[in-house]
Length: 297
Image (cartoon, rainbow, N blue to C red; front, side, top):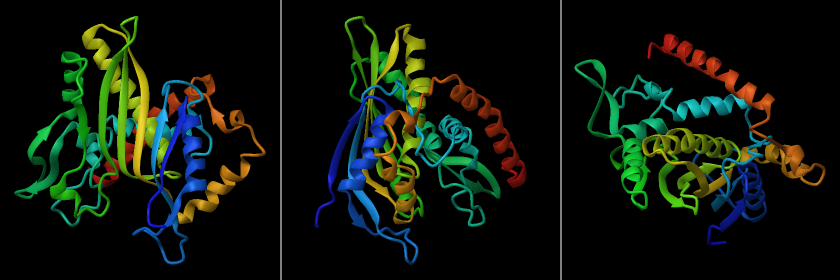
């Protein structure tokens, strides 16, 4: 085969769309090697994938098959809110082994990086742009704009980066219904998306980000009702790593005939799930504080 398949799936809720995307990839993807394979690893299953979640705020939102827990979802949402931005390393310090970036840092302070100046670690860069503020201001001032987008890729750094950002861009546009309710539609593009190990958490996290950071702030500034419209998620490389295929089979693909969809999902509005999610916040923050103490961030 000379072409990477291009696949399209759609679902009303996140859990439904996520499951359909995994099944489509498993049935129709191409086998490819990756630069991260270890000796003996099977080839990954790969495709270019377009996932549309028609109602991102609808239940069932959480799929049980994602390799993580409710607490991990809370941690990722806090990360997208900036809780780990200070973990970004000094780019010109070979002794610093912390993160190359966070998505929030690239969106909130695009063009900046941490480096040492006169022996001191400071936030530095040729320029720093708060893209989150610019997107919100653009949609408040020009509700019909097609120019509300954010990017992460920094060519001066990322071509040589061992693990550059997978997220590439977010694009927003408002649609108004007959009641004058604004519906925030969003396109997200990933250059590379680990379908089994990361995609669900990525989508869940950015749904929360779109609700809490973008839509709610537009509503606050305009006094209008802003809801989440459809989320369109494109991954140039949507893949299950070869080392993860057997786990994915055992936890999802081999169970499709023996379980119902309802048995494979959680409702985010379930009081028990909400309690676990909300109570996890302090634990996550304590984990970050402990890391900071240990590494003197």
